[in-house]
Amino acid sequence: MAAGFQVTWFPSYGAEMRGGTANCTVAVSDGFIGSPVLREFDALVALNAQSLERFLPRVKHGGLVVYESDGVTAPEPGGRRVHGIQAARLAAEAGDRRVANMAALGALLALWPLVPMADALKSMAMVLAERSAALGMNQYKARSINTGAVMKGWQSIADQKSADL
Image 1 (cartoon, one colour):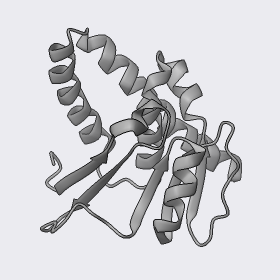
Image 2: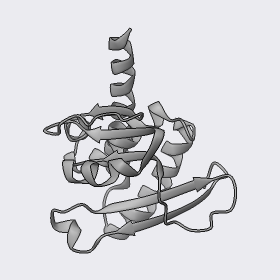
Image 3: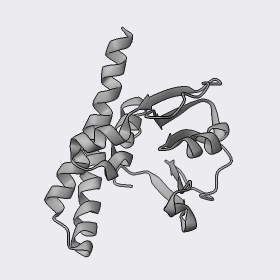
Image 4: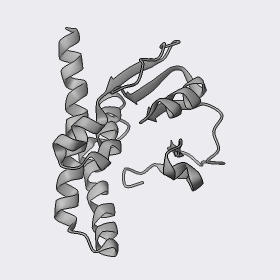
């Protein structure tokens, strides 16, 4: 939103939070978004095998897939751009394994720069400041760990591209 896009999201939590496949659909557009419910996706970030298996068929031909590769069999591309990263390991290196989603975000932005990295980090810092205050957490530590994870995810893609040369 800070970059001028229309954005909507549609989370699915519930019992899935205790080990199943929780998911969230995010729609980003420069025009009006009629519904957050999508039949096809331009991109998928999957942090476990169950999510990858469930949502991969909905990624458009030519779409992008970023998935947690640790302990997950690489999917057949099927006309998609598929990139595995060790998101949990990168998050742990940044300071907290629980921010694996931020490492995946960094990889996604390296492969699909929908918004400039600086804008993404600025927006993340604003959200973390509000959330940290509400939870009584140290916002500077949270920002440092999350920023570190985003950058590690981004760098993992840069390293993959270098290895491919």
